[in-house]
Length: 150
Image (cartoon, rainbow, N blue to C red; front, side, top):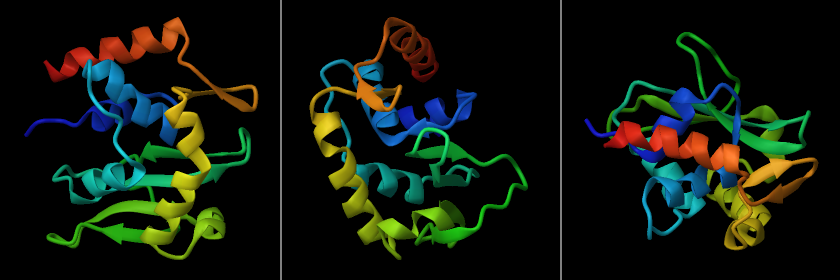
């Protein structure tokens, strides 16, 4: 089974990741690629065949939405999204995300509205309350992780 770029980032990150950070990583993994839309990213996560469950919530420390891979046996409360073929739980939107909507379509639409401008401007890294371009350390970390695909 081949891994997606987002699987490698979420599997190997010691921190929770914002959606722009995760989506922008694809440009480092694959030169001359296009950034996935949030809808496409969620589609890949929900339909993935790995055994992982991912969660998103609004992080009060940075005041942004973050995504992470759940540790085995970790339970997160919220809107559960299951793989339509296997009915296996794949993605949980935390209770504090209800402001964005009660279902996947509403949440995707509102997250897209929230992050579209920064993503289109190439601002993927969140620092001191704003999105910026990746710094060199972040680029190098993502580049190092991209070697796991080859």
